[in-house]
Length: 175
Length: 89
Length: 130
Image 1 (cartoon, rainbow over the protein chains, first blue to last red):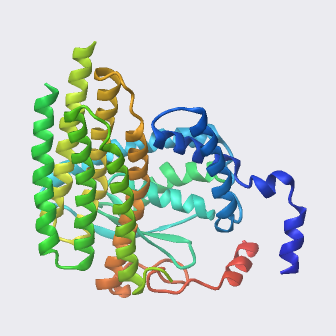
Image 2: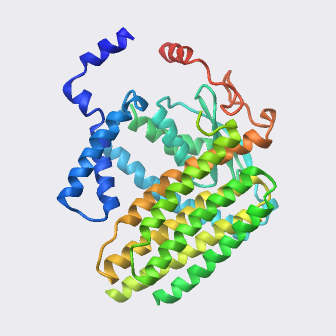
Image 3: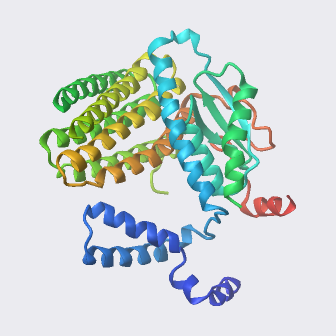
């Protein structure tokens, strides 16, 4: 307890009152989007909300995630967007034109190299949104993901694809 | 032309909602019913947006946002109840 | 210009209705719950996504009054779809799957739905040892 207080007092002014500057910016932008209109009053209320909400929820975010490179994160975003479209066409094709017994559904385990919680969450979300795979569960120690595939002819190939296409990129993004 | 596209989309999403309803009534397991309800919410959002386009008004989109939020929270709450037997621990 | 915009918007609306229907159709066609989970999470989300983009384009080009609400809804749906899918999968695992029927985790701990997470302090030590 006393230790925690000592830590609190060493934080700078910005860390104390503006713990997550990026979150403040995003919240303000989101408020303006919700208003569907730009006005000075809306901006002020958005800034107030954007400062207060991180202050009151800071206990849920003990350490802000560190993003190494924003260009790589943006590239990853567009890669995933494109893969979502491809995934949807693929899954729609399987649903409409394949008989049910042609599909080979399967649970498989993806061992994780990434340890950052935010990175694991992003990877799990990406796996769910992209071709024929849904992430179902995380190991209790956070070292592997349980993934269900709609059509998995070759398990090793699917795992290698997930690891090289998404996890390697996420490892570069999250330090 | 947009009108005919809208008619097609209304029909497709309406048929989709009927499929969801069938799965909701039929669903062998609880997870099936939760999934059917969640899909119904997403389809209803699409229906609201399309109606907004048909009317040429954006007023309904606030309802769509509320629908999306309430649908998500209720799905998560239901799953949490199944998983833990309690919603707020 | 408006003509091409109309074609584009119509195509997006038709694609949206089509994908939304395919997602719901998969819900009744596929034989097993984990397979059914694939249809709504992907197809339906893309269906709604393209309907929302069509609506944005419609109000921007045809009506001349830009509307950004759709962007918020699209982002919200795309961010929440994986979480919903994960929760439904966990509910299914909890309700009617045996832990023995799943592939092993490859570590000493089981899957989080069945196995309690290791103590926070132990996890910290493990991380330190890495």
